[in-house]
Image (cartoon, rainbow, N blue to C red; front, side, top):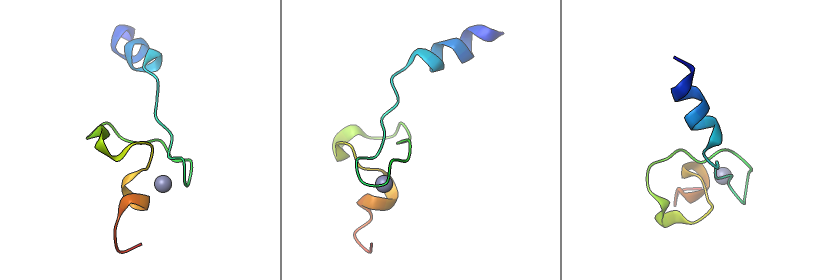
Length: 42
Ligand SMILES: [Zn+2]
């Protein structure tokens, strides 16, 4: 049961270059910016 957790632990997490939050795996077309910082209204 720990295999999945270890698998995700080994994955390199992206951190937002603006706020430092961990970027959720969704689309990597934003570069190193999280959703909040990528939001045009902000
Ligand atoms: Zn951010």
